[in-house]
Image 1: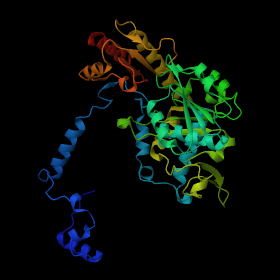
Image 2 (image 1 turned 60 degrees about the vertical axis):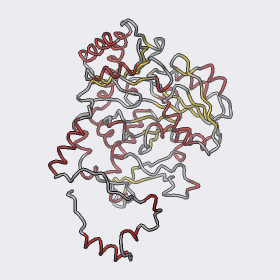
Image 3 (image 1 turned 120 degrees about the vertical axis):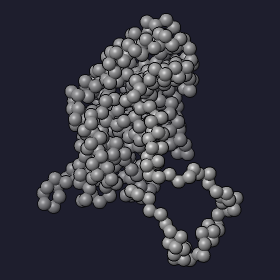
Image 4 (image 1 turned 135 degrees about the vertical axis):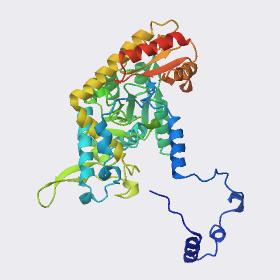
Length: 446
């Protein structure tokens, strides 16, 4: 849209309509110390052509994963996205649509949300899913709140092997709500089952576990489920990778009560780490306790299929004190991309993505551990598409040097408390040549 300037005469007319003589009078309530006295230090005005050139130069300074070989992970992954996803998502009826408050005029949006919920249920094995959360971290926090509401217990056990950022979000979410958080130690890159047994009792509301966990390792969910459900009311919350669900044991098979996760890997670009969306699914018996939107299928007065928001338990629909959550928006465009992606890929397609990611990750891990000075941080653990390696020099130096080779080498684990460790994620996009090039770089970098 072209910029439309306001003339001096138009400004005077607006001020007169407001009832003030000048702009200074309009802002008279603002303390003088906050009022800018000098002129803004701006460059001379650019023409449209100059602005376009400047913006392109700035954009070109960013190196996307199409130009670089990326091994970044830790929750956001560089999977291949079919061109049809962006084409459909960018259609104006989807791209510009807002929250479907008026269901009768939002049938298209409601239909794809319903399809999204159905696919998430098929993927997780759960009976009901909502229309998504803000991201995987907020989904984890909301799952704990839901478990507290369902069990009327106020203690949550959290695996120390979950993403540290998720832990921070959970702490912020639950402070002031008199919810006690107890963290189970991680041992050798996985949850310490003995420590879990010590901390679990009949007073807990839930146990939250991530599998694959922050380190990329797969937890022993059957053992964890047995310990959790030995309590009177304790619920098992599982945070998981949606791509991995295509080839790993379904959460329903080990009797998970709530299944959540970060859905970015389903057809959404990395986008500098956001926006994201969290998926949230549970058993039908807890549907009344579930936060967020839920879309249902029904029949209209003419007997035709129609879609509507149902089981409204958000603060915008009922009294705030009775609301299950203050979540007032689902990440609709992101979930549309996920819906299109899952529909295009199908069961076998997602399974192929997961299989290739796992196979290539294990190939790279096997090659890296042959290098002098490098080793797997958790060789005894089973991992999916992400793993941690010990490095002979600080990981930050490896990452910095890799940029000169057009490689994003991975995530430095030092900010999380692990010196000389690098987390590497591998997706189906990698070719053998890519992986061998990375191994060659690591061999030379030290």
